[in-house]
Image 1 (cartoon, chains in turn yellow, brown):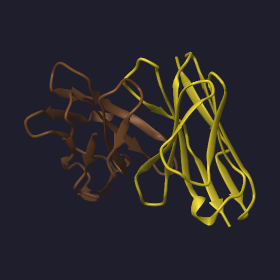
Image 2: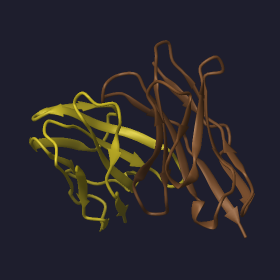
Image 3: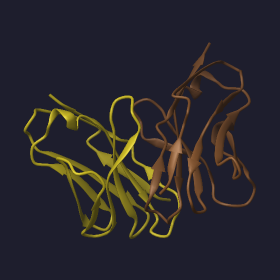
Image 4: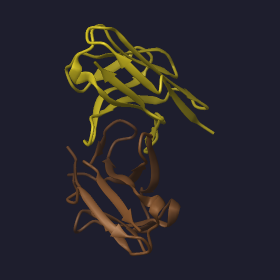
Length: 112
Length: 113
């Protein structure tokens, strides 16, 4: 069966510091991968999605970037965090020919 | 482009009472529909999905949903809720394989003792 893991689960970072959130999927190959952000009390905002290694689509221009160095690895990064980057970040995956999306456990980021 | 509306941002209900969480969507093409549940500080868990076939879909934890194409709705129901059903519920739609998933704003279900 397929599993998805993301880490760290919680992170407190000062303004201006870098960020790296990692996500890996096991049990499948060539998945579509996604990063969502969920601000406190709000819905899901799609940040990035990827259909293959090195292929990243950005949905919202912002202070963040994403990379996919390996087939089942998806990384969310920032060079300098802003207070507004605080939130709950969710990694997700779907099969390349699939119709259902599955989520990781989420990562809480607090920028102070 | 698709969109999803969840008119109720919060739904309080007493334990063992029935509940319906409303979801309406907009799309110019055929859709697949989903309900996800999010417990505090956790990721989203798939409750149920409609892909094709019977319009009444049964999911985990006793939930079910009915796809109504004419009303473009996919309401979630449970005949008797438990305290443990307290969570945020998200309706979602997609029409493409594995790329464009659109989520509603969520409905917070609070089950009261």
